[in-house]
Image (tube, rainbow, N blue to C red; front, side, top):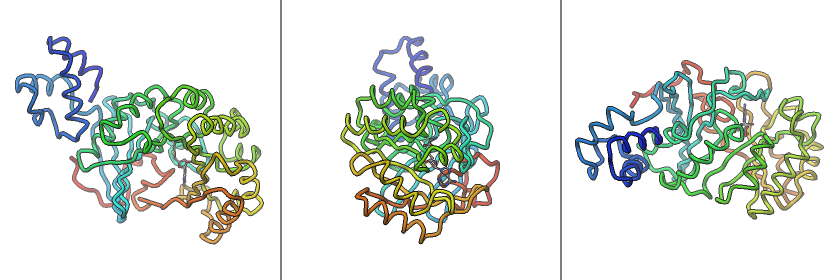
Length: 336
Ligand code: SAH
């Protein structure tokens, strides 16, 4: 729901100022539409339904993975594709992965989003409407800004959306913003954001030569500067920064590279999350054995390390696979 427009329409209609909050509270708690807002006068509900579309996004397609993951493909009102993913875990956790941009202007070599056309930054309402769509299905408790786009290129809108997530049921401590290390945004995030929102860095290589080869953005913002900003985040907030590291066979998964990574990160400020590569074309994923050995080296160096559970690969909903492909080979459920 376009919250600015909602506000403007309510002011225009001479409504009391608490109305915006009333309407938002219903939407944030998963209300299905204006008709459900029983403490809002019926005549006003009708006018709102005409003047302010309930969502800024139109659902185009929804796919369900064998593992329970759901991927939604939306369109903005001006036609840009946006994808979001709901991950369901056995322990009951419900984690939402949202997009901050339609497409992505960066061109990381292993990521399918970078290969599609870049559209534009999403508005705060377009980010929140991804969450509200899934909130209407079920309760959510975690949110990661790990869908399409680079959040630090759209930081103001990302923060505006993130700050409202507690209303949707997602605490700041359970919200994570992931970045390639886009320094202008990252520095602002580190120095200005007071909320305990978590930070993740897509690092993927222990040295500049390799990182620049697989992530061109590294030429602009090299590892030392990015790591220094993340370390400052740890010092300010006392919360470890997640380091994401996609495991590419023969590229970044060697024992020597694990040792260099350990030396770069140190024991204190980071937790490493190794990501099994989801095929997008160029690379082969590391074997399970290679991932285990890499993890062991980091473990011996005293760095907490986990391996990310792969979710939604069969519907192209896994990390790096969001490319708004018109049709996946998946089962498609009815659209809401
Ligand atoms: N642009 C931000 C937000 C996207 S997060 C960022 O890069 O951090 C998406 C995560 O999935 C990033 O860590 C990204 O590097 C990773 N990823 C990209 N392509 C992947 C692939 N093919 N397999 C596994 N992970 C991938």
